[in-house]
Each structure stands twice: as structure tokens, then as C-alpha cells.
Length: 180
Image 1 (cartoon, rainbow, N blue to C red):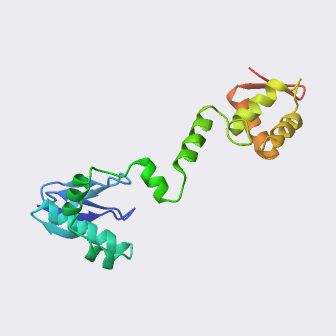
Image 2 (cartoon, rainbow, N blue to C red):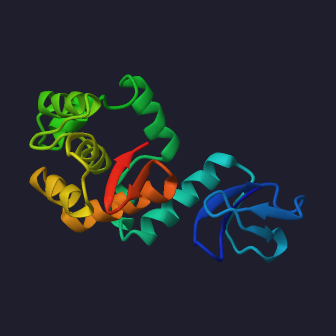
């Protein structure tokens, strides 16, 4: 016996095997433990595939896609067709189908891996660390100014400087900061 049940906290729907035998069930999304006899059973069937189809129908209805769902094949049939086509869509096909240039996305990823992106030298925290290395006895104003020239808002640079100081990565003496 399979039952499609729903969480009272997060409203997630999942398939529970043999709900009468289990005393409790844990929601796979939020982790809340429920007493199975108190869970609402939206669909019950001896066949797991029928329960999967019932869950899919409920999710389609919840999303306002009941008509589209009615026009699609059974869940198991869709999986079989996907398997026959060779599986899932590859990254390039997905990106180009979304209107993006796959080569440009790859180039951006490579720039990010190297720690640089168009117009800035790495992440915000890297810019603040760079300011501390490059400036002579930098003050908070110096770091904020340096960071702002590189696209990091001055207030954000000050916040990062404070966090680095709390973590013990930066020390401050007489208003001047330095990396440890």
C-alpha cells in the first residue's frame, strides 16, 4: 500500500510506503516527524506508479497546471521516453534554449575561477584584503575608498573589515589596520 501524504508545516507532498504499518513519518523537505494516522492521505493505492501519478496530478493542480498535466503522458511513460532519448538535456543545450551564449557562460565561469570578473578584482572580501596589503597603514576610510574604486560599496567594505577584525584575520592599532 502506498499513500500520498502532505506535511502540515511545509505542505510538501510525498509518497509513504505502507502507512498503516509505520507509526511515524518524517517529511523529506522540512524534517518534521508526523504520526502517520494523523496525516491526510490524498491518494492511496496498492501500485507505487499509481501513487506517483496521483502525486504528480496534485502538484500540477497546486501549480495551476491541471490542463497541461491532463495532456501529458503518464509519469512512468515520460521517464521511459526521456531514457530513450538519451537522458537529460546537457548544459549547452539548456543554456542556448534559455537564450544564453554557452561559450560566454563558460568564459565567465573561467574568469570567476581565476578570481577575477569583468571590472573587479575578485570577491568583495578579496578587494578588502587587497586594500589592506596595498595601502600603507590603511585606515577604515582608506580601505573603504580603495574598495569603492573597485566596485565594492564603502559601507560594505567597512562591514567586511569589521568581520575580518572579529575573526582575528585583521588587527587595528591607532586607527590603522593590517592583515595577520
